[in-house]
Image (cartoon, rainbow, N blue to C red; front, side, top):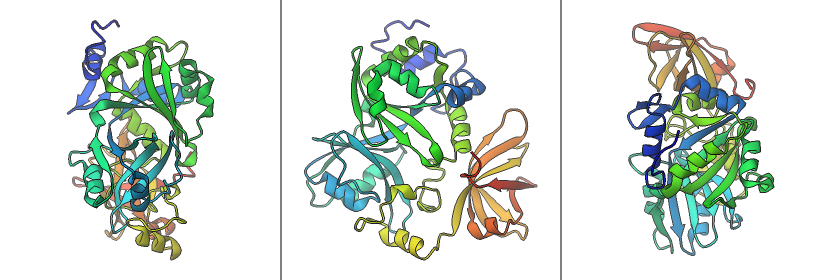
Amino acid sequence: MFVENIDTISLNEFISLKYKDTIQYKDSEILSYTNTHEEYNYLRYGIGIHRNYTLIIELIGKDVVDFLHRVSTNSVSDVKPFYKRNTLFLNQKGRFIDRATYINFGDFHFLIGHTDASSRLFNWINRYIIAEDIKTKDISGNYLLLDFIGPQAESFLTLIIGDELKSLNGENVIKCIVDGFEFFIFSQHELFGNKYYEVLTNSSFSAKFIAYLEENRSVFDFGLVGEKAFQKFRIESGLPAFPNEINDNYNPHEINLLDEVNFKKGCYIGQEVIARLDTYDKVQNKMVKVEFNSTEDIICPVLITNDTNNEIGEVTSVYKCDADDKYIGLAIIKKKFLINDSKLFIDVGANRIPITHQDIQNSK
């Protein structure tokens, strides 16, 4: 579909025009562009492009690296220019403030976290900056972050930027200039073999950039993906998200993010709690996949109880399968009840519904 004046319209205007007959919204969230089934198939079998609503913080100053190394869980002091590392920000109790990607651009630095109404990570970081030479700025509105997910993503992006894509290893960041578009690209390597690419581009030409990608789709099974299809894919892949699992109720042990904690570095905020949990095997909860049936809509979080009606966890994310009343989800449950294979339930209205669970690493 040709969109007139694409150089001057915003991405939201472009999407509203292009998908005006099929798009589904919930508040400002795009549930689907065309239909969920088609978009899910892009993620599983082709290329799904998911718009990632992010908080992007620019940090400038001679103390940035030392500061971030001191307050976050991972080692960032050795991250070279045009390299990145995922790291976690925790409170004093070892529970989440946010999960972020740190990128060193040499003269300046980016933290890519999660956007929310309270600017949680941005305000938290500024609270801990005291005498350091650091200036922070929320530049989220200046950039668009796109996730390229699916088995054809690597081949498609190679078509766009060339063989340089093969140099991405989960740590480095490539700056690309292609047909007048300037953007950064890097890869993310999640637990249990989930790999995808992220493209960070200037929001001033984001509509034109999306149109360019669509025009160059070639033979690839390619399309934009809304939140419904992405949530199904995320849940099936066992990936925690903000604010469902990444929130101040939980710590990195419980949602499989320990690979972003460096146990050899010095202190960071929440370090004592995280180290003690690891040393003494005191982790009480575990994230698992769950399934259940319900004719009613489920709004998370939902308390989980056992057969003696004790509260033992909660369902944190759900997706309702289209074909029937089956739900799939992620839940965080006390480990001792998983080991003992207790009967688990959720209460929805007047109904007590049994749920089944499965380890994430054993369900791929």
